[in-house]
Length: 609
Ligand code: M6R
Image (tube, rainbow, N blue to C red; front, top):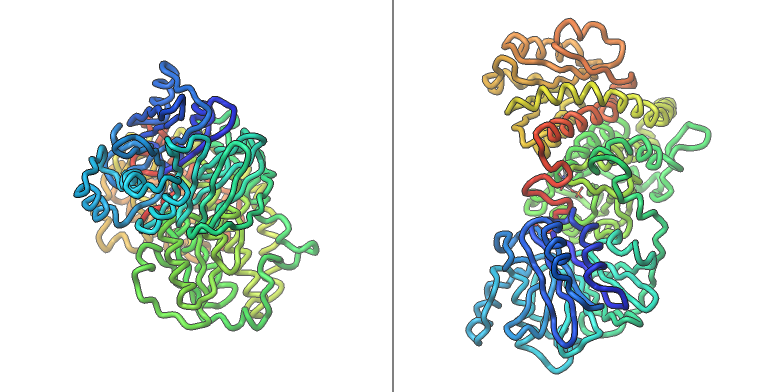
């Protein structure tokens, strides 16, 4: 999962490439590089570390030229180093290549190329592409690229330039995202739309197995056999500024505070005007179709998987359909029991997560209907699923997912109520009440966010500890899992989530004096039980922070601290609990001096296995 950009036109290429890469750093940031065409040759500059290191080098010694490709890397094959940074070139530097994805048969290709005299300068899989271009050169870049693509296997988005054909840039997409930006006398390629928005709003999202030839004056698209294909650009209407930090010190904090709006946008148009039902115009299912579903498999990774756990409770409660929630990287290699009537729901913020996409394809191959819940219109998941519910969270830049999770929950509640109503599994009064409650969520979330200063204070204290425990029962446990993931992901503090009743079966041994325990107590039916579990950890002198409903005076007697959230029904508690947990993780990370938006070893979009 890397970011690639390419430019051809009248502007200084270096500036366009660096600006584009800065918008793609969320895809990887362990090294970066650019190649610029000038005066009959390629000039390359690459550097391990953040993009800023490369920018500093280029500022000191700019590369002059109006055509180039650039890359920001998240290492898969070969550690982060100058040599492994892209672009890569062949032996005679006649070709330069940037790549996102994995060339699966690169070992074999590398051996064959080495045997025929090629010398490799890096440990990457990508470099084989440059040498293959050299090896198979026909005298024409287009036909050579087609020949090379016949022998490489795997997932790739490629940007390619050749010395013999200045004024041309080739882009290829196979299982890795790539878009074309169409300008006036200039054209662009990029892994994601924000990278080109400064220059153009007209984009074309390359289809699977498409190749584009870009010159200053135009773009032509082909399939991988070289047949021309017609393409329709789309006009991007969302604002580039929406992808900027907007005054917040980190994208994560901005995105946490955007949640009331994100929830409002995700609900918009989906609650009926009379306030009695849920409408999902994007799912024009018949009653019969909904009734036929015998089981649902929710498949996702990370935070999206955690949203799925809440979705299971929502769907089983409102639609009375049995739901299994599965981690995509496991599901894709299992032999799950499905019937023709099993619905597969994939959840993915980016819509590009490799394992989730593979699970989707597996489900499609076995003839199952797939519903995708994703935040990215035009993403692979959105394009390949039968049905799509878009979460209108807006661009999520911080690696730690926040508003995407919250809007995924909203989408799942809506879906559960919608299908439940179609199946007559839920009475209309319950749906009407849910609609009413959901409509109050944005305002209540604003109230939750007002507690940020208190959470910051608590996080400062907690950040001195090397462990934290997150407890809850029922839906509180599902949210505890996400709270713990957020905490460890950005604060690097060991965090574990436990179903509160399970502690005494082992984990209680880890509870020592003063250790931070965050206990969720919003499941009314389990209140007494949760309280008993809190007492168990208090008896071992843990420092307990409870997350409880406003007005719960009782809880304060049993814990060290309480963070109150506005009252709603227990069923919707995850929507109230998650923001305090995100803020706790955020401030603990800041207190530790971590790079909040780009936690170590991680990338925003995991497009490799
Ligand atoms: O884009 P996706 O929702 O498919 O991403 C799935 C996970 O990689 C993602 O949620 C990850 O766990 C987050 N970084 C957690 O904050």
